[in-house]
Length: 282
Ligand SMILES: Nc1ncnc2c1ncn2[C@@H]1O[C@H](COP(=O)(O)OP(=O)(O)OP(=O)(O)O)[C@@H](O)[C@H]1O
Picture 1: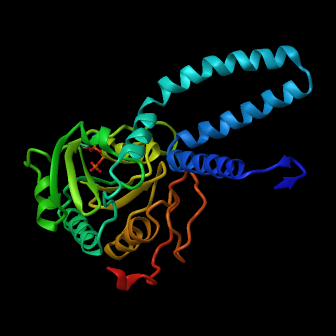
Picture 2 (picture 1 turned 90 degrees about the vertical axis):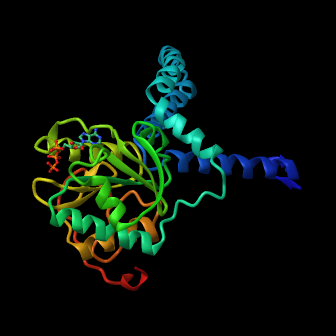
Picture 3 (picture 1 turned 180 degrees about the vertical axis):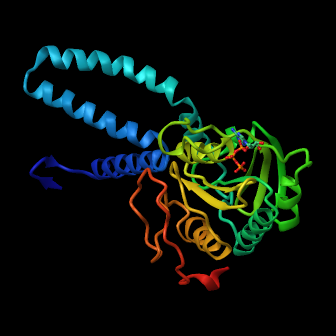
């Protein structure tokens, strides 16, 4: 077919569609992880480099070109965990179910309430797009259906696996006693203990929804996208779980009162909750 760019044939169209698809898949792989900011940085860097070349700024484009080569190796080292997770996701068997059933979410919320009532500390990460395999490996592998008694038993004070975090995949508990990455104790979250900082840390590096029950206060909170949400009551917890795990499994933002998503903000301003629009789903 003749166009202003010359002849365009079926291969050209297929080529463009495939490149578009790969770029989109690449975006999905990094979305919700800290790598997304790095990708933005790389795009700015590449933009300046192209501009320097077009404007004939020889020294600047030479320096940026050299820095880019070194930078690629630095990125491979720095983002080794993310690259591993991305490749794991590409190679993951298609049929795997990461969506939690309404019953599992209901049990999870009830278990959280019971743990909070008894002031039993708990840390639970729900896997979404980013595989949590590397964190599961730091604990004990399990394969059990999510249930109230099982989660209560895992976190009971003298239970062998009560220390560390539990990882959920869909409606199953896949690991317990796991070590999550700690958020640096600076700025906003300085005053929090390690359980809460482990929740924030994991949510910063992955798109997991991380639930925390405080042993000290008996409160329930959710960490998502590197932010710690406010104390939640049972209804609010169910609403958040429903929105984040059931309705919008890829969202990286805390839901707002009307069920829409907030723009990401690194604060711990309480998130308004209370939408009942999906109540019947659980
Ligand atoms: N990196 C980590 N990964 C997973 N779990 C962790 C990690 N660090 C600490 N924990 C869990 O947190 C517990 C210690 O919680 P700590 O009292 O320091 O935190 P906190 O945020 O003040 O929580 P709480 O309000 O429940 O006291 C440990 O016993 C362990 O179970």
